[in-house]
Picture 1 (cartoon, rainbow, N blue to C red):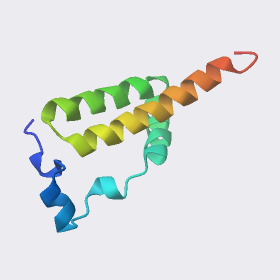
Picture 2 (spheres, rainbow, N blue to C red; picture 1 turned 90 degrees about the horizontal axis):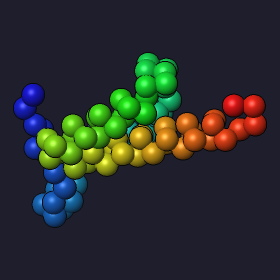
Picture 3 (tube, rainbow, N blue to C red; picture 1 turned 90 degrees about the vertical axis):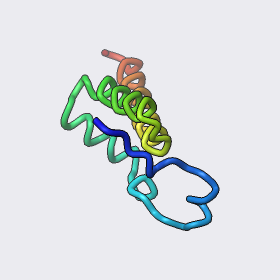
Length: 85
């Protein structure tokens, strides 16, 4: 799959004032949606998306998916720490 090199952050992008999907995307909502779609595999799916973005050089995409992964990881850890689990 070809990489998307338009989402690299540089001083020129910041000066240009252009908005991208990652300026509007909410990692918390993405985490909830990933849980709905992938269930217990949501953490793995988010990690895969983050790694794919990283290897493609899509820095904003990578940071977004790392945030989603972190949300899912914290939710997973919290559910395991609750009494009765």
